[in-house]
Amino acid sequence: MTAGPSIVALREVSKSYPSGTIALNRLSLDVGAGELLSLLGPSGCGKSTLLRLIAGLAEPSAGRIEWMDPAASHRLGFVFQEPTLMPWARVADNIRLPLMLAGMSRAESDARVNEAIAHVGLEGFARAYPRELSGGMRMRVSIARALVTRPLVLLMDEPFAALDEITRFRLESDLAELQHRRGLTVIFVTHSIFESVYLGSRVVVLSPRPGRVAASRRIEGPTPRQEAFRTSAAYLEACREVSALLISATEHPLTLQGEGNDPPLPSRGRGSG
Amino acid sequence: MVAPALIGVLALGVWEGIVRVEQIPPYILPGPLLIARTLITDWSTLFPSLLVTLAITEAAFFVSAVLGLLLAVLFTQSAWIERAFFPYAVILQVTPLVAIAPLIILWVKWVPLALLVCAWLVAFFPVLSNTVLGLTSTDRNLVDLFRLYSATRWQALRYLRLPAALPFFLGGLRISGGLALIGAVVAEFVAGTGGAQSGLAFRILEAGYQLQIPRMFAAVFLISAAGVLLFILLQGLSRVALGLWHESEIETEG
Image 1 (cartoon, one colour):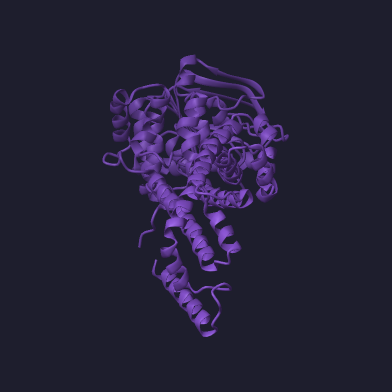
Image 2: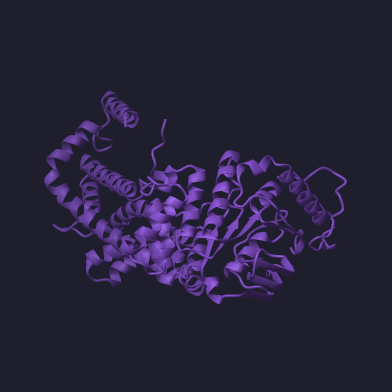
């Protein structure tokens, strides 16, 4: 189930490496236009590989990736786990990079760069170098760079994993607000149950390697998310359920859980975020 | 700056003291004061020779920097090219200069050019190997990002690989500067050319033959001073180029 019509669909996608490692095995997934999809799974389950395949940075070994509008496949933003900034370039020039590579002149791109800077709340830091910024601010620059091309789809690979909790909460709320305002489709990879539930309108749980979809659950909650949601009963209940799904996927990697199936309750405690 | 200066003054004082107390003759070991006096009295011979040696050094250094960079870019364009040529660069590097300098001087008739080739052979490898390392150790995610935005090969080189390799290139230059000077001096020793166009190495040989040991020391001092100056200049260049962004040049606070 997706939020609306699909924007991209993965059909029986497999990915194996020359070393013999099978990262993904016949994974199928529909991503709805405008949805914020959380991809949750244990470390090494192929989540990052999946994002790289969608981004076109790697080719699937088998299966297809279908874009409903082929133009959308070129309107992507990618945010890595690390801010991945060019240390020799100022904030504005880091954000300008995608536009510059597309051949846009400085004068033409200025307005777009300033808009992206404003979107992530970094006004006043355009001329700073990355080393002068905190970890959270660097990640904001990375997000601004992904947004500057006005993408239709934003791919995010555990972008907030290395940040302290307060910064992470802020960035999560800002992302939710931004996604809602711009109608972005976001595929958000995380290994945190709490993050996946807070952000996602849907959480897709992947099994351990080779990764495939083990379960999918819609998350009901305010759109865009607000901080109050974190302490609501609905949020905690969703976390409990997603935790059970994740444990079930980890313990029984070959028993696939379809959407809407009641997962067996775990015999031990909740997985941690 | 105070600590090395203090150690230097102390060492020179001990040196002068030993020479005086032990009454060591100047043709065995001259004291620092005598060397300084010789430096002043023989300045009119030593300084033009210093300029000759420095000219060879600078030319060899410049050619090393340019060719080292160009070859590094070429090597990183294709794994095949790198595999095919890199072993030869290593062979040139590990072959002792004194062993091949006579051949080069024999083949290249024009002595300054022969000296330049010798100095270049020693100096270019650090630039090449450091720059290759820099060009190939670019952040993998940044490489992916450039691919995602369909960057051309030239754009990836110009905006990503070259800036990322800059600290490595400058590190190579710092080593290469000193080696160019050593290469030039060794080549001059082998060539042993005299006359007005002779460099400091010839002045050292000449002083040795004439048992003018203070002048020999003065020439050695000039070579060392030139090497230190070169190093400081390259350090300054590195600071200017990287000061704002690279960890190696950022002054720590607090």
